[in-house]
Structures are given as C-alpha cells and as structure tokens.
Image (tube, rainbow, N blue to C red; front, side, top):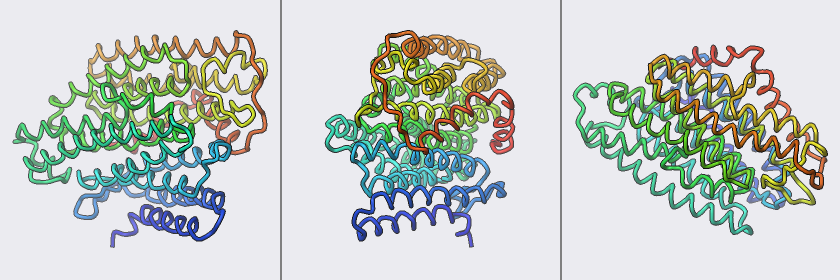
Length: 470
C-alpha cells in the first residue's frame, strides 16, 4: 500500500538495472546511456516533486520518512545532479572516461543519498550511506590512467571505511543501550537515557562529520578533490553534503533533541574548527581544486553553526545555506570546465592570470562566484551567511558568530587574490571558446541566481521555513 510513496526510489533502481543492461548488450552505447541517465534524473525530479503534498508519513515500520524536508532535499540533490551531468559531458569525453559505468555510478550514489535523506532508522541510514560511498570510491579513481585519480580513490576508500566503522560502532552502541535503531522509538526513551547512548551519539557525529569533510575529519578532502576527475570533484563538493546534512538534522533533532546539552558543544567545536581551518589553510594553495576543498570545509562550518543553535530557525538557515552553496559550487566548476586548451583542462591558480583580457564574460562570472563565496553583498552568498549569523546571535552564541565573521574576513583574502590575478596580472594564452550549450546554460543559470538573488532574498527562506519544521 505504501509503494507509491517510494516510487521515485523504485523507478531509479529499475532505471539503473535497465541502463546497465543497455550498456552491456549494446556496443558503443556510452553516449546513449549518459543521455538516458540525464533523462532518468529529469523524470525522477518530476516524481519527487509530486510528493510535496505529503506533510509527513512514516512507512515500513516507521523506518522511512516521507515529508516536506526529505522531498525538498531530494529535489535540490537531483536538480544539482542534472546540472552536473549536462555541464561535465565535454570534460569526461575529452578525458576519454565516458564509459557506461560512469553515469550508472552517479545514479547509484544518488539512490543512496535519497535513502539517507528519508531514513528514520539507523540501519536504513547506514544502507543508504554505504550505497553512496561504494559508488563514490569508484568514481574518485575512475580515471585509471592518472595516478593521482587512483591515489585519491584509495585514500578516500581507506579513510571512509574507517569512518564507516566508527559510525557503525556508534549505531551498535545506541542499539545496545536503547534496544532500538528507530529514531522515533529512541526519542521516546531519551528522558532516562544511559551514558552508552551518548558514546554512540559521539561516534555517529564523527562518521557524519567525515562525510561532510568537517574538521578534524577533513584530511581526505584536499587530496581526493585534486586527484579525482574534475566532474567527480564537482559531484563530491556538492551532493553528498546535502544528504549528510539532512541526516544530521534528522539524527540530532528527532532521537536526541533532549540531549542538546551533550551534542551542542561538539557541533560548536566542529563548526568553529572548520571555519577557522577552511579560511587559513586555503591561503597557501596553488591548485584551484584544492582551494575549493578547503573552502568547502569552511562552508560546512557555517552550515553546522546553524545546526548548533538548536532552534528551528537555525536548522532552516542551514538548509538555506546548503542550497545556495550548491549553486555557488556549480557556478565555480562550470568556470573550471571552460579552462581548456588543446584538450587539456587547466586547474592551477596561475592559469587564471590575466583571464579578463581574453575571456571577459568568463571573468565576470568568476568575479560573481568568488564574491558570493566570500559573502560580499548583495550576492546570494552574503544572504546565506546572514541567515546563519542571525540564527546564532538570537541564541546568544556570540563567540560562534564572532569566529564566523572573522573567518569570513580571512577567507575573503584568497577569493580577492584570485580576482586580482584574473584582472591585474599579465595575460596568458587564451583558452578555447567552443563550449557545449549545456555548460553555458549551467553557468548562466547559476551565476544569474547568485547575482539576482537580492531582488527577492526572502523567497528561498520563506520556502524553507514552510518545509523545515523541527
């Protein structure tokens, strides 16, 4: 009777199996499978949006939750995946990694994320996490001819396996001391909770912090971001963070909302560490992908600051922040895909030297993206940080707000340095200008949203406030 509520997940599972069959039995079907995968995502988006009318339903013995939060998070995940697919086609074709497995692995990772987002049970959440992680291990090392790609896949596998083990240990502790893995059931027991559950809570926070590359569990991010193919780095930088943040919200605010005094300090520490480290460590980088890795660590610090406030407004500001962060990430990597000469993609900071002389439109787009990442008004990135700081200050968490503001100022240095290199340094040989329409559309839409967001900044916040009700 409840199968219609998980029809998007069923459809995606069947589509993955069908596309695998097409790829195996039809020779030279790489492009066909890729295009069918993109079409699958568009249909999937329509199926997910159709569930917005459902406020909250728990199915499968209360282990799977369909509500407005899950529907919204799945929607922005799928929309981002569609733009990742259409913007990165030329890149993976040029690198000769357009194999049938590539889009199927992306679809498998998205299926895992969808399961994570709707999970209301530790076992269901862990199944989704592993489905996502197994696909990401392979994607990180997909460019087998590149030793950096193989190395990044191995590093991610080893460290992710360690974090998954810690997370599973935390799940077993919670199950052992509470007698259940179900979030709803655990929440009814938290009045007389035992210390063993708090230990389990800490281990699960560690595992989730690894997945969003928050300090001090960030060590994999710079190497994996640099070594992976750029299209995979874009996928890493954006989508898994949405699923992990949703699990953070589900986990902290349903079974353990009464233990806020126990976990709030941990989240505040991780948030402050991530903001400071992300701002300082990025200053000395020479590779754009490594720089964006440290930048993403800092951005996850801001997102966690909203969660640390312990209020509905704080959670809403975090969801708003991650939504705008997705747009900024898509825009930045779209610019990166355009830095190509003679089938070689450039990713060093020095390659941006004098870009404005030969590519004025690309330079303006990068200017908008970098200013938005720095949080300079009136761009979307400013409003994302503004909502976070408002939520934190309303809870009188002034130290967290001050650290956030100071780290924003420090981070602005390396974004402004890039702008200085683009506009004031000596020009280099120009990049090729024959880009696919999909890449141009992705860049135009993402930078357009960042630039024009100030016209109606309350739209996203109002939407999120109706969706996220903790």
